Structure formats: structure tokens, C-alpha cells
Image (spheres, rainbow, N blue to C red):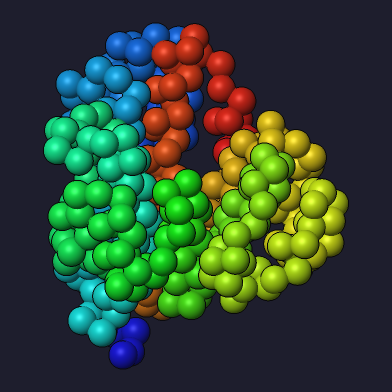
Length: 311
């Protein structure tokens, strides 16, 4: 493929990114200190239609994630056929969310109970990795066996499934979407740091999956300092200031800020290509998260340290 093949997709990606809500509107919404007032602030923005009728933060978060998935699906329609692997890899994060929610329902014996709020599966359409085949499982054992036969592989125990599937997704990003490698490695470092700080030992499947992402030395680290020493300098910087589990939110917010900054950089590239599309998805993903964070802050009275971290 040549850059000419990506002109339409790059043009569309930049236009979609320009339609984001933006930090200013989100800060104004958060400062209202009241749910309905925040919704009124956001009503004239791109998020207004999807937030209409949302009564809970879970509903608003689901609406934002669904809108993001739809945006990725729209972009996929503009991408040359041989380039759709990029957006399929990006969309796999939404499939992880679907599978995590499904596993939780099945573990609770709710296979036939209607899902509500933030548990409604996101519609991935043709971007699904294996969701159409997996969504029919009616027990944890059935789901695990179906996953084992899919590109996701063995998810381990129900307790390990969210982290293992997230790790598989991050490994896929590193392998298939070069522009996301720094973000994926930082996210992987935060995942293993959380497990370490919560005294959750690394399981063999997780160590194996994250080998191509972080190496394997981290699995023997038992303190934050040891973990940083086991990682490459660039990845270790993602964990600066993290000494306890309560510090992770700030590192996660810094990562979102970096994803946003890098996303804008990718959008500004003069040559059309997959990186422009990745940049648009990155900017829209952080924007969606920011809207949810603003609503959470408004519902809690208006203060939001996390929005302050992500400029």
C-alpha cells in the first residue's frame, strides 16, 4: 500500500478528531458540581446526543464507549482493505470489555439474565476478533474452552481472565500497531504493578503473554523499585512515583495524557497513513474517557484531580 491509499481514511480521521468534546467543555461540566447541570453543559457538544437520557455514570460510560467503537467502525469503512488489521487490533480492547463483563455474569450464575447499564455488549461488527463465536457461551467452562480455541487463547481462571485478556490485547498492539507500542508497554507495566502492589503473584500464562511486551524479569520483582529495575528505562518511567496501589491512578492519568499528546502528533503528520487513523482513535478515546471523568466529578461535587493530571 502507498500513502495515496490512505488519503480518504486520513481525511476522515482528522475530521472526526476535530469533532471531539475537548478539555474545556469537560472542565466546565465538572465544575458545575451537579449531574444534570453537567449534562446541560455537554448537551451542545458532540457527546450531547449520546448522553441524552443517561441517568447513571455507568450508562454514560457505556454510551461513550459505544460511540468510540462506532467511530472506529466508521473509520474502518474508509481504510484500504489490506489495512483494516490496524483498526481490528485497536477495537480488540472493546472485545476484552465484552468478555470481562460476560465472564462476570457467568461466574455469578446470570447466563440468562438481561444485561443492564455498563454490561451491554459493545457492537464490534466486522471488527470483532472472536466475539460472535464466544458470545453464545452459557457457562464459565464453556467460555474458557471457546477462548482457548480462539485467537485469545487460554484465559486462565475466571479471576485471571481480565488481566490475561488485556495482556493478550496489549501484545497484539505491540505486534500489529507500531504507533501504539509505547502506550501498550506502559499499560502493561501498570497492569503488572497493580498486581504486585495488591499481592497478586504473576501466573505463568500472564508471564508468557507479556514476554514480548515487557520481557520476563518483572515476574521476579516484589517491590516497586525492583519492578522498575526489571523494566527498560523508557517503560520504568511510567511507574515514577508509584509506591503503593493508591498511586496508580495518577500514573494511569499520565498515560492517558501521553496517549492524547502522541495522538495529536500523529494527526499532524503530513503523509496520509495508518498512523493518522491511530492518532484519531487515540484522541477520541481519551476524549470519551474525559467526558466520563467530568460527569463523575460533577456528581461528586465538582473536584477532579484526575482531570487536572490530563491537561
